Image 1: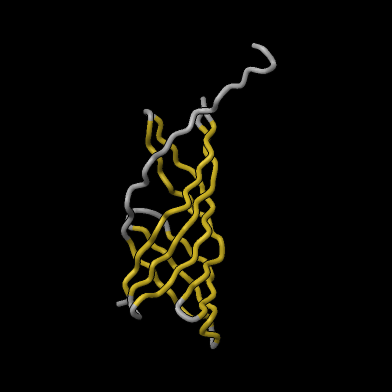
Image 2 (image 1 turned 180 degrees about the vertical axis):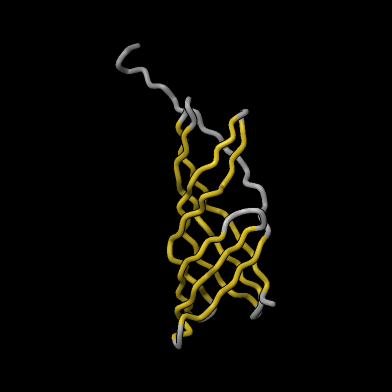
Length: 126
């Protein structure tokens, strides 16, 4: 191999399956702007994080998802991803949260970098 030769790393784009579950937001004490957020994915994990509410917006503290499952090219990865999230309430009952995923995963043969920046969660206030 010559010094000027470069090896292009493989890039895969995979779609995440939709998830269904419950999202609960509760005030922390007397401060209505500081809340705890509990995400309970059906058949999956429970994630708890804190958030700050401002007007119709919510800013979640970064959290980790441990059961994100990717399948592609005959490889199944169960890994951990870091999540950044913020959202907005519409018409007083619809919450749309935008998330960014970043993480790494390995198999015995390959290492993967995981990134997604257009991931949305919708919740309806009961």
